[in-house]
Image 1: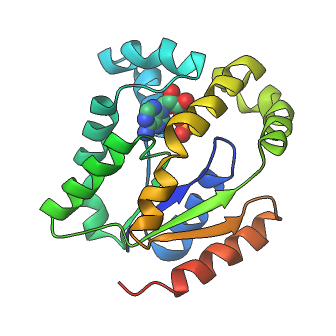
Image 2: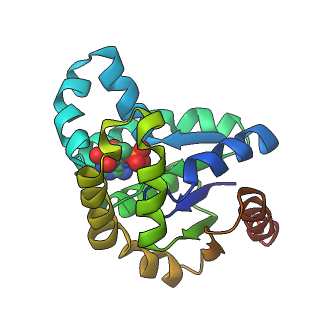
Length: 190
Ligand code: AMP
């Protein structure tokens, strides 16, 4: 099964993705994690994206599409993929559909974690000190939230139109969100 965990920054996508990895043997594909690894390694790609990420802006579609494409084979050998933080633009969503179709595969379900902007801002203000993420500062977080609202949220009608969108209350306790996701996945026929 291929699942997109959809939602704004700090909605809890990473936390829920890790639980699905542990419970179902799926592979988490987080473009944010891949880009942070590139920065940590000091690679050319890392140097290219560091400033963009620190400001909270999106990196180019080409970069993240390439990162995802490289990792698709390993997800097929496992229980499927959890896309976390990808796609974030319509071009990425269309490229993902095309890449999967070429491999005889598809997105099965898109789970949207719904969280109000005010709750996200409070969450990130609370975690900034310990997260160590330079883009969790209030200014960059505002840019990330704006990028979500203007460039990523418009994907919701795209997936709704495909009949794949399921909504879960992301403001509930972590276990309750997890149950909501499990229920959403139980309703999917692959
Ligand atoms: P995340 O860990 O998903 O919050 O991503 C952290 C940062 O990495 C984002 O603010 C962007 O700068 C960059 N990034 C991650 N995924 C994408 C994507 N799919 N498209 C563009 N930029 C991305």
